[in-house]
Structure formats: C-alpha cells, structure tokens
Length: 324
Ligand code: SER
Image 1 (spheres, rainbow, N blue to C red):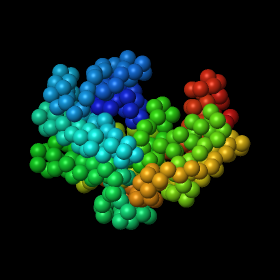
Image 2: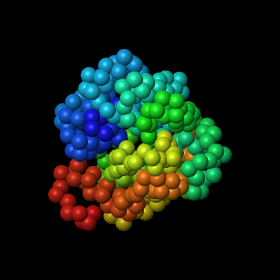
Image 3: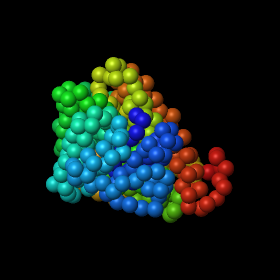
Image 4: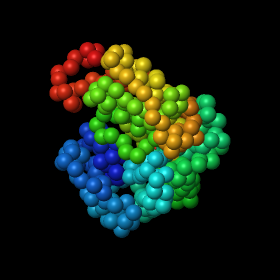
C-alpha cells in the first residue's frame, strides 16, 4: 500500500480510515472518493474525487489518473436498508464490487473490501462460529456478502489479484455514524445516553451480536493489508470480533459512567429478525494465527473512550480522561 484509492470515503469506516491512512502514508497518497460531498476533513485534507462506484469507466479513470496501487472498496448499503431496497442493494453492492475488482485486475492493484457477520445465517452455528462453516444468509445483504467473498476469491485464483477482506462485526465509532445497519443501535445508544440520558432500543434484550471499536477495525484493515501473503489461507473473509454483547450489556457499561441513564425497548421486527439470523459470537482464531489480529478495546474500555469523545465533541468540554 503506497497510493490508495478509497470508495465510500465519507461513510462510517471511510471517514476514519482515510484520515488514518493519510497520516501513515501521506495525505497526497490517499485518494478519497464518494458519491456525496461534505465539509469534512476527508474532503479537504487530501485528494477527493466524486465517484459513483457503479460507473465502471469513471472508476477506472480515477484509479488510473492517480496511479494508485491499492483499492479499498467500502461503498455499500448496510443490512436494514438492503432489506428495504433489495434490488438497489444488489446493483450497488455487487455492481460496485465487480467494478472495483475489474479495475484492480486491469491496473494490477492490491484490493480490500469488508465482508460481515451478515454473511452468516440461521443455520450457521451461533456460538464460536468457525471461520469455515455453513453460510446460508436470509438477507439480501448476506447474499451480497457471501457472493462478494466468493467473487474476491475468484479474482485471486483466476487472475492473481491480491484480494483481502475481513468479516466485520458491528462497528462502533464517534466520528461518522453508520446508516441503515442492524448493529447501529450500539452506536446510537452512546449518542442518546449523552444527549438525552435515555435510549429506546430497537433490538431486544438478550440478543447477542459481535461488535468492535473503530480503532481496532482500522488496525485490522492495515494489519491484513500489510500481512505476508504467503501466510494467508483465508484471504477474503477473516472472522474478526472484539466482543459479543446484547443491549443490556451496553446499558450496564454506560451506567457505570452515567448512573441516571435509562433504557427501554421498542423492538423493530425487521432488524430483530436480521439480528437473530446472525451469530452470537464468531471465532477469530484464523485471523490471529494467519496475520496476528489483535484488539485493544473491550466493552468497558470502549465505553469510556466513546463517552469521553462524544462529550468533548458536543459539550466542547475539556473533559479529563477517567472523569466520566
Ligand atoms: N453493521 C452491519 C449491519 O448491521 C453488519 O455488517 O448491517
């Protein structure tokens, strides 16, 4: 990775990954692209190009113009939106992916795209879900993710494209919010805890899903992309998780800092059904063994950091670490 093109750079992952990679590889060497434009650092701290990833020629021309050697393809719809608009999800998630892979093949680029815990389904073992197991998802997002994993393997085996990927769990962060995901509750809860002192969860209590704090997710992307390719057996779909949690676990963690915080439930049947079709806790052993995956944040440490950053962002207070 020396010169990197990122798609979906204004999304939840892209907003932070772009800035992290610009610090590491030089601002001019990270080309942020997105279908939208905003006033954020991502747009103004380095090269930014408008890109609709379903436009294959634009994709190719931008990659060629900037002489990139790596594509990090993040532009996609998340699970709940994909369930509302399945055809749009197919066209964007699969059309964008195949364009990104074709550009990588034509220009001989290294390639990363995230898969997800959504690549599993109700017939997958729920506890310590193995790396290699049954993948029969029942959502459009899951169909896209399994097809994507297979397509990335195909581009590696058939054309020698250096494709790599992670099955991300729900990602929790304070910079850019996620949108349209099933795991979004675990981000919203922190925002509401600070702004309103109360959260109504659309995911029911007792529903366990894997989660990870964004700094660990960014380290995982960089760790995998810089890993020795000869050690990688599972190139495109490494299980990675930092914690398996249910809404009441997050509630309890927040209450340690904000004792007056309250939570109730108003379950959304669509997102609840998606959540129940996913694993409770996936096994990240292959990622640990093949490229040294590790995390720094558990629920307690993440909660302290999230609340500190959100307080700082909104209240503008010089909050001492450990003071909330
Ligand atoms: N966070 C994603 C979602 O909820 C899962 O990968 O859709």
